[in-house]
Length: 155
Ligand code: UDP
Image (tube, rainbow, N blue to C red):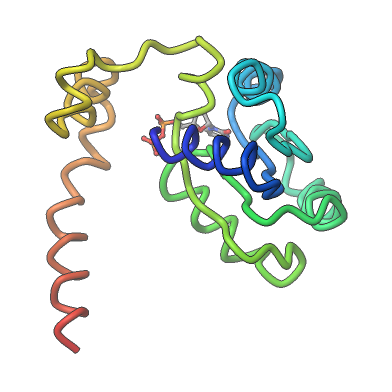
């Protein structure tokens, strides 16, 4: 969540090109508009919602590639966003692609962010789990993910 805002700030300061992909129709646009109020020089070079048909994927990837973003932020939920980025990586040709989950909903004002103290103490995930208990299916995999990353880091 913080990363989306920090990247928009960096874009405002240094001109990096950002593309917002994901969320329901209109939501990423609204998130972009809200962020542009605070960071008016941010280069949000394209926006596309995340509820498209498989048949439209090549056209969407081509449209993103044509906008030449430096960073593609994909908010289509884990693991769909990561799988999509991986499957289309060659067509996209974007140097940095990051899964941002439900961040566009938050910046669009559709979903309320966790209270500050929860953000500060690293408990934002718990807030989001309480808001949507079905997330438990994803959250319970995180210790396994952390374990595998740690094991892989040992070589
Ligand atoms: N979403 C999407 N396309 C889909 C399914 C979901 O764009 O086919 C969006 C959804 O509208 C929401 C985001 O993906 O904005 C998922 O948010 P969530 O908080 O569930 O993601 P998580 O952080 O748990 O991966």
